[in-house]
Image (tube, rainbow, N blue to C red; front, side, top):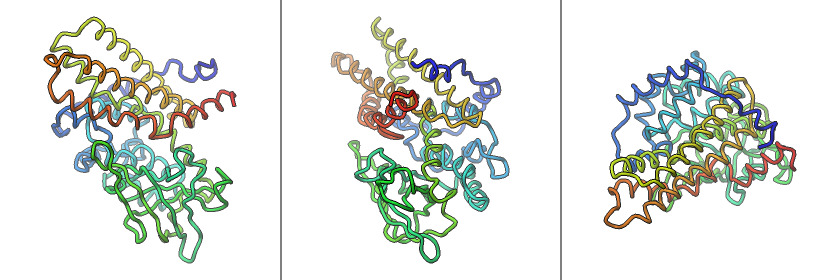
Amino acid sequence: MNSDLASRFRQARLPEHAQAFRAEVRAFLDEHQPPAPWHVRARSWMGFDAAFSRALAQRGWVGVTLPAEYGGARLDAFCRFVLVEELLTRGAPVAAHWIADRQSGPLILKFGSPAQRAFYLPRICAGEAFFCIGMSEPNAGSDLASVRTRAVRCDGGWRLNGRKIWTTYAHHCQYMIALVRTSGGPEDRQRGLSQFIVDLSLPGVTVRPIHDLNGEAHFNEVAFDDVLLADDTLVGNEGDGWLQVNAELAFERSGPERIYSSIVLLEHWIDALRRAGPEADQVATIGRLATHLATLRRMSIAVTARLVNGESPLVEAALVKDLGTGMEQEIAGVIEGELGRAPLAALPDETLLRTASYVAHVAPAFSLRGGTREILRGMIARGLGLR
């Protein structure tokens, strides 16, 4: 690794107050996490359970880093790291509040108007307002600068037209923060982009589910046809959308969810081996995976430390996301291979097979969501001065 980049990941540790917080989170989960089999727990941050999210909110742990005046717990990003780590490793269903807590709330706090903060943040912290992300578009992929969805000034505000795609749980959310073009054209790239808070119940908004290979429909395509947005739905300043969305993506790309998407499957496999008696090569495989995960965890904590210091570690977050999602995919592939080579008589219980099947089906998406591998590596190359 480039020596300058490597220096940004040195000696990052969770402080004592964050470690102490872990016991509180575990006690909460012991009491409130709904019982579920392994293959359901493996969905975790794709598992939508509004009641669980509201129970978490009553504890003060939705909008956990937001100020107390808005209902937040006013904890730092280190405590949020611990909270997220415990939720994911337990396989808790967190999708309902996930986006609002991770990025929409912090974005509104940083760039939103006083009225936006006063309206949306208390609702996020109460588990009453769920947000989705309006970035990707048909025929644009991960090239956010080529978005074509457009908002045009009109009497009473803005007229919004266009399409967003791969919008997770838009059919369950009340709001979307959408990156749209307010001036120029796609050839202008980053210039002329702005962000808006879109109420998904407005006339002209259509949410269409997209079914995946598992038959599930957590992705959606969202169409905007002459949707009238009020002036106060613009986040920050017109034309600052690219600056804002990059700050938002640093939150999205750096957290434990970019490491632990396969962690329930790994734990289930280890549990099955513990009961059956692992072979020597399987023990070595577990050691290798655990070592890599430990290193990635330290890197993610280092990015968290930079966020605590008020920085925007875009390159570091991109690197953690790229390496982390690759590790998540490798875990799925390794375990699938191990199960495939087992004699039929030695196959484990059905829940392990169902868990492995689910994770194997969704694993290709790990390196797509939050920015494709190709886009991230371009960012990293620019950050290292290689292009």
